[in-house]
Amino acid sequence: MPCHAKAGFQLEAGFNSDDGSGPLTFARQSEVNLSGNFGMVRLGNFFPESYYATSDYIGMYNHETGSSSDALYHDAAWFATGTGNKLAYRTPMFSNFWAEGSVSFHEKANGTAGVNKNAYDLAANYNNGPLSLGAGYSYWNSNYQAALRGLYTFGQFTVGAYYQRNKDDNFIAGLGAGTRNNFRLSAMYVMNASEFHVNVGRANSWSKINDSAATQWTLGYNYNLSKRTKIYTYYTRINSGKGMDYSSGAASFDSIKAGTNAGDNFSSFALGVRHNF
Image 1 (tube, helix red, strand yellow):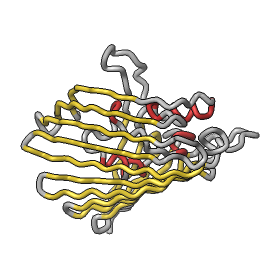
Image 2: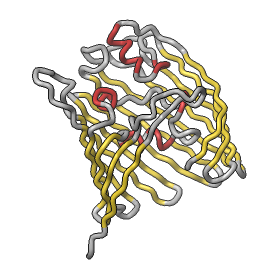
Image 3: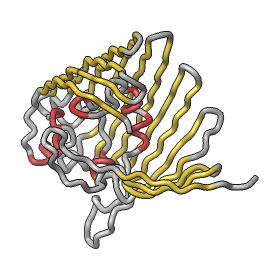
Image 4: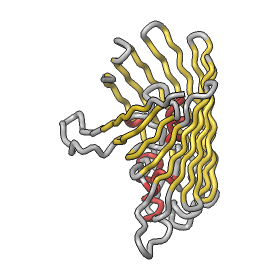
């Protein structure tokens, strides 16, 4: 069988839409890839596919953008090594199934322990009509996350959920936070061009950090002007325990390290327009 390959690339830059500021550097997803009937090889800067296979997949209201993104999903490999300097391989589609594995290389500074270790990521997806399943696993320096996801559509309703298990040996608070379970449920009802969304997540306390549980919930509405353009609005709220501040996303783990981890609640209302070019 002849092998037909094609090269591709993707370059993304970000800016602040309210005032136009921000350096237009390609610090977001920026990769080159080679694909064919052998699958795809990717090199560059991109988010872990395990995240897209689980948390992002059930975030149907705005697909993990803005203040409504999943604040409880945790991946030490992602936070520690970033999204750059990666090499990934994605399989072809086999009977509605495909998978991707990647390694995030970190520069090996002499005498640097822990942070100079490579990170590894695995993701799997299965789609068959109304049923969609996914799984993700990440590992870095004795820290790991493992997650399972399911999504099902019946009539005008779509329901989804994921479960994540974390082990943190040395990332949060320097000495590690222990283990934790994280759950999220989502639902969507479609009526003509309108979409009504509800999404609820719960992170249990880390085994070594007292009062570190949190809950996040979001109510959202989308009106699809076309296949590529929609108007959206949502309200999201995060209730954090006194031992963890989930309101600031990844920065909350820096606050744990610094000892300034007083719990805080967060709420946000948004109204916007989204267009896919």
